[in-house]
Length: 179
Image 1: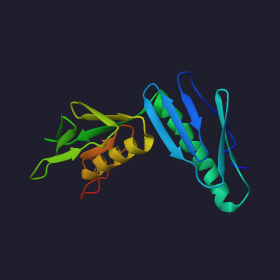
Image 2 (image 1 turned 180 degrees about the vertical axis):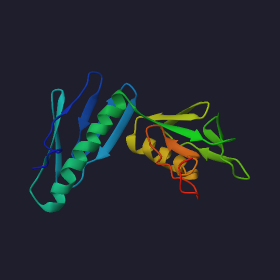
Image 3 (image 1 turned 90 degrees about the vertical axis):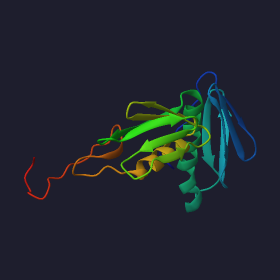
């Protein structure tokens, strides 16, 4: 049996879960999320825990078991606590500003980049740090990846956009010695 799939999910206070035939709806203080269950996967609510089970032991259904449990667990965490990612902008003259629902990024190109934020993702800017937050883990991670992709950090001077916990391994230049 799946090591992840067999674990029960604890539901915190203030979060309600509704399971229809093939749909799971999670409501909490920060919002609500829903998930269509994959074929062969079932979900039962027992008081303040959720148990995800599978119909049989076919390989394709076994592969979906842990995935479904992880998605439901992320939904429960999202509506109760939320998710956030921090990005840092390093480089001389690199700037970021929040303008309504758009991020204006000055990254050394001939023009500024205007990045429109997705629905459900909120950004806050503090000098050269962008904090993205929302209830959907996938959306927050996708927006962070798209912003980082605009100017990836380079290994020589470390200029670019990086995650706050990311370590950029630096290279020495042409001379071959550390400067």
